[in-house]
Image (cartoon, rainbow, N blue to C red; front, side):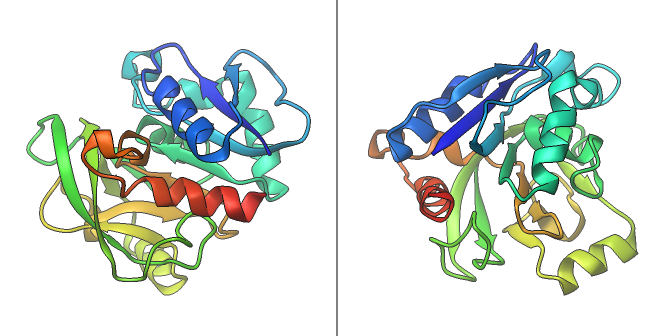
Length: 221
């Protein structure tokens, strides 16, 4: 399976994400610079990494969402190609309109960098198939703008359609309804603030993130 990791100026988790995909799939992804207008032919997975694209200037992800490669990503997502956005990637996907809502400054205005507990709210997606619904897992977060915000109607729709993939256990950043990750209405786009790519090997002290990539690779393959 061909995969692509998108690289923006200010990305700093692109290599971690590439390593995770390579370790699980056995095939290294293509690193795609944001100025490119096209994705690799036959790409089966697009991953948008964490970091601080454009230094979070204006709003986190706002400038990256206008990069040339994003037009190709929006088109691919419309065709059903899986798109995974992590941390700044989640912010970029909301700014590009692929996911609803917005990521605001954390409640308390502090950068949060620690492991957090998550509840798996939906294990029926291509991203969460290796988890059990209601399972509690542990993933690291590292963000200043992870406070997920949307209007009440949008939040109700996400709840009603089973599009909340992960929810925080306990206080983390003030996110509405403790949302940590959401799916698009087609189920092929996932945005999440925690970093599964940082916990895929026992040397990391935790492998709870590995199953996200294993389930995704199985489904896509």
